[in-house]
Length: 117
Length: 109
Image 1 (cartoon, each protein chain N blue to C red):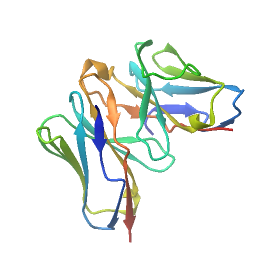
Image 2: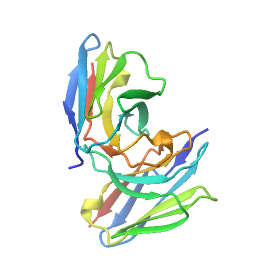
Image 3: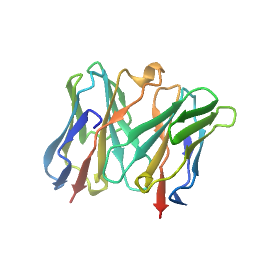
Image 4: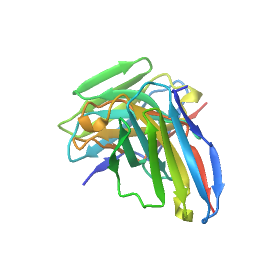
């Protein structure tokens, strides 16, 4: 148990649907992250939030919209996705934003397996 | 550019020792992480190296040479449950965690 939970664990959606992924961390951390993991590819950083403020958007298409209402919760709102967006979406948290260069360890949730039809 | 290289797949025998290598070329360096990821599960933290040398933690050890842009993860007394993907990740000075594609380790009886 890593202290980071994600729901749903599996999601199938059509290209015209709107859905949201939820992440919650119970570790008292201040930074939260969204990553995309596609088959046979490295984890790709999507967004970073530090103290509820977005500090990084890694050139992610606007059909992915993050929301961070507080330091414990992070959402990823999805709309008009494409089949190539099918992947495992991982949430992570760390004590502080790695951009400060402290090398803070990130703790990952189990991910949401997304299939876009 | 940013580049993290590690072998795609490795196979080893239960009870043996295996070394998973990682080489990196990044715009900066502020530490290297190893994570373990079982199929369908979250990546879990194994080790962090920021200084040259060997860090030992039970059956797992991690080595770093910053001058060579090189790290390895050493797994001793392999067990079947060690079958997983092992991810090498570098924290560059820009602050991003850059991941390699992972090494799929299969432990055979």
